[in-house]
Image (cartoon, rainbow over all chains, first blue to last red; front, side, top):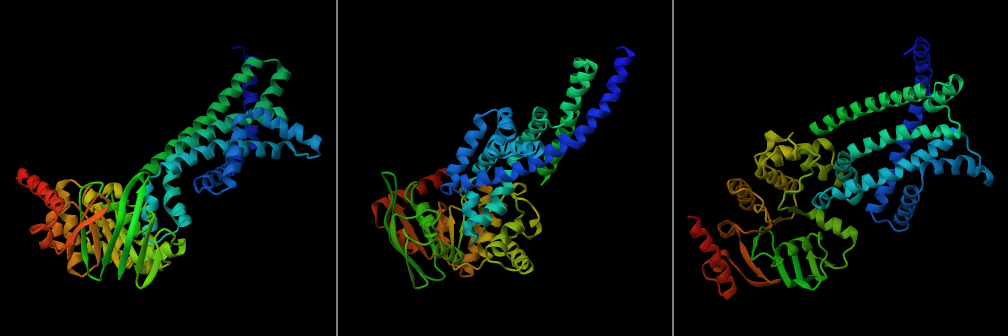
Length: 219
Length: 250
């Protein structure tokens, strides 16, 4: 490797990495937290069989899972302005990512709730608790333990998917690497470099997941 | 105290309960015996509304209820006067032994935590599980789990406890410890309905034995009547098959 390329990789690493800290990570975390709230509500209205809301939940999951994430981003950011609704790039991205991840995660949580044995609910009724109390204190804690590994998967997936936000002008890690590549023409090296940085972030998340799972196991 | 009349229940084309009537007085220990599929468990579940009967009347502490159309509120009220012990224990897997016992008091009945824990420890002591109050269900043997299940049932001072085959899921060497606990409750005058396959236990503990077959009560009476002088042919057949099994075990 020649010296000039080596220097470029060193100097660009910081430039890309800082966008990860400033943009990619916040975008991921905020979207994921919102996604969890959306997923929980979407799963519960289906399990609790609440009319109309259950149909709405199925419709939402159907639409989101049946259309590409990149297209969803374009509809919200480039499409909505023609209806007079103008959202900045960052809120658009948060909106799309949280509803997208929420749809998939709701299916994970729904399956985990349904996997809790029926006897847990019956025992709850028999000791004098009502549906909401049993759900909150008994069923959901057990379900979330089951759902934890697949939800971690969703989080890692989301972190990588946020690179699509570059296409709606969000200056994240990927757009940072694109700009440097355009300036220096070292496309191969820079896209490899940004790939490695994504890998670093994902590895950290995977390690965190393993730690948390161990803790859940002990409990 | 508790009476059900003409309880009927079908699952699809299968008539599981065909007009069952049952009266329970205070301090009764009623054992329900009979072959598998005779409707014993379904009857118990209908009394606690875990299964909703197709028809039937319930009289509980002088209040009348239509068992098919009981409101959610009445359901909760009746359940709070009763307790249920499950065949497969159904302890809350995310709660410790003590939490299993206190959860219903604290959350369902809004009892202060400290008072609930005192009562919970007393209930655990009664079933010999106070030293393991901090254990999770998966850290306990089947017999220990079922004893916690019984502690969870007695902690709320129910008017009647319903036992659904409390020893059927246990290894033979663990059955004794659970039966011993139930026997103690019987001596103290706890009102209980017990669905069981433990014939010797039923004979020794019950004030009344009911033999069910094909969704009907075939014969009922004092334990010595049913076990030593059964009148009905089907009761005789059923009991002799049990006797044969006990003989061949020896």
